[in-house]
Image (cartoon, rainbow, N blue to C red; front, top):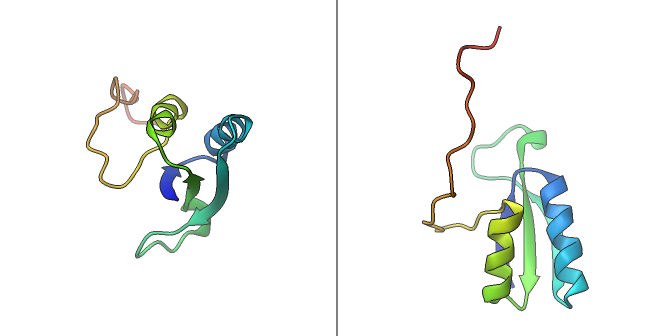
Length: 85
């Protein structure tokens, strides 16, 4: 199994549903990184088996990321024009 990370559970749940409908085995859980204290800020870790090119295509569609993934997103994230107050 290989790991895919998501910032939100909504994105992770969508890809789990899609992968399971195609016959993949999945496991979804919270994962904290070194030094993280906030349990609500932990990433969602999705383990997928088998891990193949189809899974990698779906990761890009559903907004996940993989450690060591050097591909850049299609466009940068939208940022506010001015400070929020």
